Length: 341
Image (tube, rainbow, N blue to C red; front, side, top):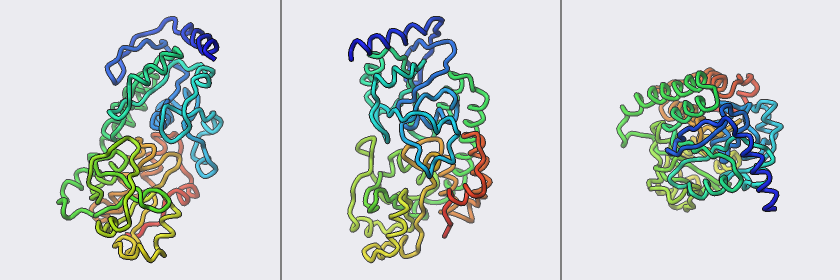
């Protein structure tokens, strides 16, 4: 195995004639080919970034494309192998598999929760230049899009994407900052099939809720990168959230008829919202630029009079700009849940 890796690494290094030196978003000097055509995204958010900026360079996916998701993916991406990543939602990366794809570079996630030296070591062993990208919180994404657009030769479209995020966040922020904290909608973020896992209000997993003016009832600092901390139903009852936001369709349907949850104001009022998630989740897992659409959607649910939104039009504009496609009416019907304020 070691001999195979060394041989493949040698072949990989041989293609870097004419390399240029760049500085990545971790401040590291990296030699990369003059023209980068084959890129491995080593974590789910980087797959989403590449999908938005340069999908033609993608070599594999961190997670599988399922039947429900397939219609939202470009045909080429549907055929890519699922090769995993350093960590995250998909399977773990296999060094031999990555080398066989012959990447020009790999993109890695720069985050305070991630062991950067360990990732550098993993790619150094197989001779693939690794470029770190900072994209934890939504405010990181304009810079990440501009950087990646410059790196991969798509600066113009990436600039338009970055400006969209900045402009929409400013628009929502103008409304939200006018609402005192004690007047904000109390929100519980229900994760897992039973709805009893959640994330702190300081976590990037729940950032969209806070940016939309929701008051995440689980007030704490995150303990790690993955989140999904377990809590009890008694805690949820004590929090008394007015709205529940969830990723789980099954939970959203079942909890309305679950006697133990009837004391939760959000359940009693039927204000349980399932996050749209195709082709990438609008709020979380992976945390991506899709959150800017999620923030607008949530703000319109929390404060429909203060932040009215034509969600179908906004969704079409976003998908065209970031994903190169416009959903059909039928796709929007399946993507967007019915609204109850």
